[in-house]
Amino acid sequence: MRRFLTLALVLAVTPMTVVAQDTTLADIRQQLAVLYSDINGLKTELSTTGGLTTGTAGNTPLDRLNAIESELQRLTSKTEELEFRVNRITVDGTNRIGDLEFRLCELEDGCDIGQLGDTPSLGGVDNGANVPSATPAPATGTPAMAIGEQADFERAQEALASGDFRGAADLLETFGTSYPGSPVSQQAQLLRGDALNGLNETAAAARAYLNSFSGNPQGQFAPEALVKLGVALGAVGQIQDGCITLAEVEVRFPGNANVLQAQSAMRNLGCQ
Image (cartoon, rainbow, N blue to C red; front, top):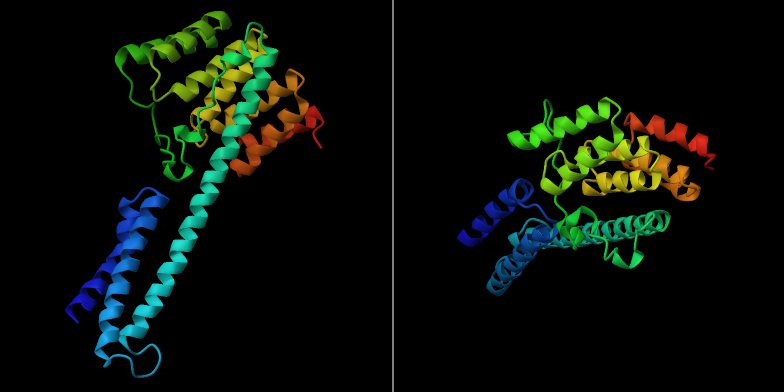
């Protein structure tokens, strides 16, 4: 009886613990497997006594354990299903980004397709089940940066605002190399795309927009980057890819202000 009460307490506390601490579907599934094993052991003990197998259905500890076991099996199955779906989305998204990189390389002068290499998995991981939840953008202000880092970023912003597109593009390229883990790296790539677009280097701008989006597909600037990527693809003659990319804006970010811009761009491209 003491072990049954202990297990009941574990079952009562576990759901909140999983939600609060576990970060992956694989961890949740592991927790369910441990509980499933404990229930099997306890059920064996209850069955051997012979005194707990009588009574109306659901009124004995064994019946209740059977119900808990059934629910754990259902949750385990659901967890595996979600893990599979996340993995599938990760693989599909990575393949699409790789295809776009290949097409953009074909349009760029001096781009060697053989040097592209493998496309990093969407989200930066190989297993979709380990994809971390996106970090929300700060509610106010600018993300914390080092003094030199912030000064370099502001200098690039000022160059772009003044119409010095070449200077801005070069400064932002240097910024990305100097501060690869910067909290504003997605915005920096987006601005670099704008600078290259101002220089009429549309294919290179499309690559910058693609890098901005793929760096954080759920980030603050992801919808804008996706819209500009679709427009740039259409501008270099990749109409179908541009339409598909623009259609993804509403699918991924329903209700976002950039959805209207994407729809307008689709009309301009004559998307069906």
